Length: 113
Image (cartoon, rainbow, N blue to C red):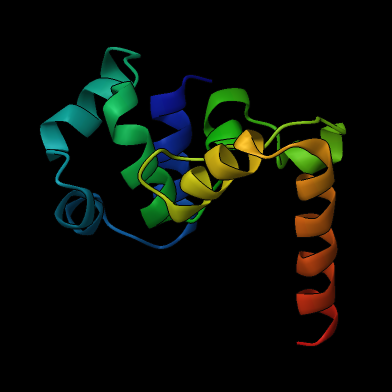
Protein backbone atom coordinates (compact mmCIF):
# COMPACT_ATOMS: atom_id res chain seq x y z
CA UNK A 1 0.00 0.00 0.00
CA UNK A 2 1.32 3.45 -0.88
CA UNK A 3 1.42 6.35 1.57
CA UNK A 4 -1.32 8.07 -0.42
CA UNK A 5 -3.55 5.00 -0.23
CA UNK A 6 -2.89 4.76 3.50
CA UNK A 7 -3.94 8.41 3.92
CA UNK A 8 -7.16 7.78 2.01
CA UNK A 9 -7.86 4.73 4.14
CA UNK A 10 -7.34 6.74 7.33
CA UNK A 11 -9.63 9.51 6.07
CA UNK A 12 -12.32 6.88 5.56
CA UNK A 13 -11.67 5.17 8.92
CA UNK A 14 -12.01 8.50 10.73
CA UNK A 15 -15.37 9.11 9.06
CA UNK A 16 -14.02 12.21 7.36
CA UNK A 17 -14.88 13.24 3.83
CA UNK A 18 -12.17 14.05 1.33
CA UNK A 19 -13.67 17.53 1.12
CA UNK A 20 -13.30 18.05 4.89
CA UNK A 21 -9.75 16.68 4.79
CA UNK A 22 -8.96 19.01 1.90
CA UNK A 23 -10.25 22.01 3.83
CA UNK A 24 -8.21 21.12 6.92
CA UNK A 25 -4.97 20.40 5.07
CA UNK A 26 -5.13 22.63 2.01
CA UNK A 27 -4.53 19.57 -0.19
CA UNK A 28 -6.82 19.62 -3.25
CA UNK A 29 -9.22 16.73 -3.74
CA UNK A 30 -7.76 16.20 -7.22
CA UNK A 31 -4.39 15.53 -5.59
CA UNK A 32 -5.99 12.95 -3.31
CA UNK A 33 -7.53 11.27 -6.36
CA UNK A 34 -4.10 10.90 -7.92
CA UNK A 35 -2.90 9.12 -4.79
CA UNK A 36 -5.34 6.33 -5.59
CA UNK A 37 -5.53 6.29 -9.38
CA UNK A 38 -1.87 6.98 -10.14
CA UNK A 39 -0.44 5.38 -6.98
CA UNK A 40 1.24 8.68 -6.11
CA UNK A 41 2.28 9.77 -2.64
CA UNK A 42 1.87 13.10 -0.88
CA UNK A 43 4.84 15.41 -0.95
CA UNK A 44 7.14 15.33 2.06
CA UNK A 45 6.16 18.94 2.79
CA UNK A 46 2.58 17.79 3.44
CA UNK A 47 3.31 14.92 5.84
CA UNK A 48 3.18 16.97 9.04
CA UNK A 49 -0.20 18.55 8.29
CA UNK A 50 -1.55 15.14 7.21
CA UNK A 51 -0.32 13.53 10.44
CA UNK A 52 -1.72 16.37 12.53
CA UNK A 53 -5.17 16.19 10.93
CA UNK A 54 -5.35 12.38 10.99
CA UNK A 55 -3.67 12.16 14.42
CA UNK A 56 -1.10 9.59 13.33
CA UNK A 57 2.65 9.23 13.59
CA UNK A 58 4.66 9.86 10.40
CA UNK A 59 6.23 6.45 10.95
CA UNK A 60 2.83 4.84 10.44
CA UNK A 61 2.19 6.68 7.18
CA UNK A 62 5.55 5.62 5.81
CA UNK A 63 5.68 2.05 7.09
CA UNK A 64 2.08 1.01 7.66
CA UNK A 65 3.11 -0.31 11.08
CA UNK A 66 0.69 0.64 13.83
CA UNK A 67 3.23 2.41 16.04
CA UNK A 68 6.97 2.59 16.14
CA UNK A 69 6.80 1.80 19.88
CA UNK A 70 5.78 -1.77 19.05
CA UNK A 71 8.94 -2.17 16.97
CA UNK A 72 11.30 -1.28 19.80
CA UNK A 73 12.85 1.48 17.71
CA UNK A 74 15.18 3.89 19.40
CA UNK A 75 14.11 7.12 17.75
CA UNK A 76 11.46 9.81 17.89
CA UNK A 77 10.17 12.17 15.21
CA UNK A 78 10.66 15.83 16.12
CA UNK A 79 9.72 18.69 13.81
CA UNK A 80 12.00 21.72 13.55
CA UNK A 81 9.12 24.11 14.16
CA UNK A 82 8.18 22.46 17.47
CA UNK A 83 9.52 23.57 20.85
CA UNK A 84 10.78 20.03 21.43
CA UNK A 85 13.29 20.53 18.65
CA UNK A 86 14.74 23.60 20.37
CA UNK A 87 14.88 21.72 23.67
CA UNK A 88 16.75 18.88 22.04
CA UNK A 89 19.27 21.25 20.45
CA UNK A 90 19.93 22.99 23.77
CA UNK A 91 20.17 19.66 25.62
CA UNK A 92 22.83 18.45 23.20
CA UNK A 93 24.93 21.56 23.87
CA UNK A 94 25.18 20.65 27.58
CA UNK A 95 28.00 18.59 29.06
CA UNK A 96 27.17 15.17 30.51
CA UNK A 97 26.79 16.45 34.07
CA UNK A 98 24.38 19.21 33.03
CA UNK A 99 22.39 16.72 30.90
CA UNK A 100 22.11 14.41 33.89
CA UNK A 101 20.97 17.26 36.16
CA UNK A 102 18.39 18.35 33.60
CA UNK A 103 17.01 14.82 33.31
CA UNK A 104 16.80 14.67 37.11
CA UNK A 105 14.89 17.95 37.15
CA UNK A 106 12.49 16.68 34.48
CA UNK A 107 11.92 13.50 36.46
CA UNK A 108 11.14 15.54 39.59
CA UNK A 109 8.72 17.74 37.64
CA UNK A 110 6.95 14.69 36.25
CA UNK A 111 6.66 13.13 39.72
CA UNK A 112 5.05 16.32 41.08
CA UNK A 113 2.31 16.53 38.45
